[in-house]
Length: 419
Image (cartoon, rainbow, N blue to C red; front, side, top):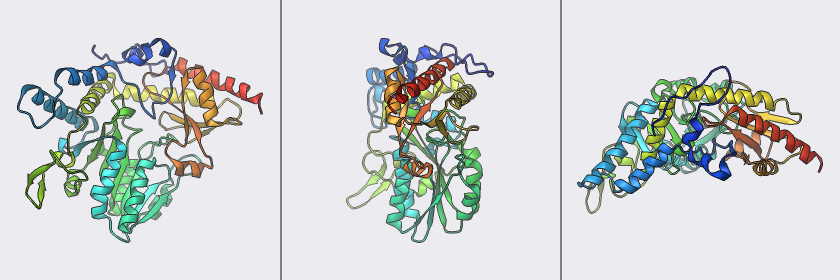
């Protein structure tokens, strides 16, 4: 089944014509009226991705970079073709700069252990924003503890924007690394990472960007923003779980120590010492998630044929439509910017706990997220324990948002009886 470019109209979020039919989960009887609004946590997979993963398992299931026989060579070629697709998708300089990992979490940990412990020294400073996912926070807490570096925290204001004046005041000759998300998974804030990276480089610092909420929705160019490290997960961009990407500038990856040791990542092994393979294989020990990489490559094909500009515009219009209609509900508070934001909306409905609201909506076959969204510093800054979160993607429609709004109002009426 080939992918056709979506029929999208910029004037209103009518959805892509027929694109939902490419996603088998919505064809199951119990899911035909499912409103799935949790793509910021994990997205659904189109048939093309499922087919690519299945083809590997059924037709050429073999290990990569080892066998001289036909199906092993096909497995290797498919795995490396996926790497090249990622390289082109984010405009890396070379496929050597693309390291396959299990997800963004492993990618940041990989950087903290392999680069951080080698290059961060006592007295150095690490700047982390308050809106970071735990995956881009805790590894740097660990690195600071192990190296004797100091953590500095960049705050966000009441509108959900990072304080750029404070950022400039934090940067100094002591700054070794800046960790910042491209798009917040809680607030939806689209951070000015290009400008922030430029300022960090002027101070002599390295920057790692968490692109997990950006890459699925925006055309990302790591050279244009000049990122040193950039990480993201396949399962948030129509791909399988268990696969992700660590992009790093080649000079930085060359400087990194391997974190895992074993097959494939070695050049030579002697009794008391070993030498490492070339990039990217130096940083990919053992048997990798071959089917996941192939599935990620298929997801990239799907997104590119659909059109990243189309996806961006669709998601933006759905978000605008949702914000406009949610803002009219009495007692509903939205966290984060009301403009220039990603398609994830965290909110609170007065008198209703986020988990109770999620359970109520689930009874109406509407799936949202509830909790701290693995971003407890952001919750502390907002002064709440948890929020509800609705997030949108290319398979969502305006009609689904209208249904979501209708049931939010129904939930308000229902819970008002008990308050």
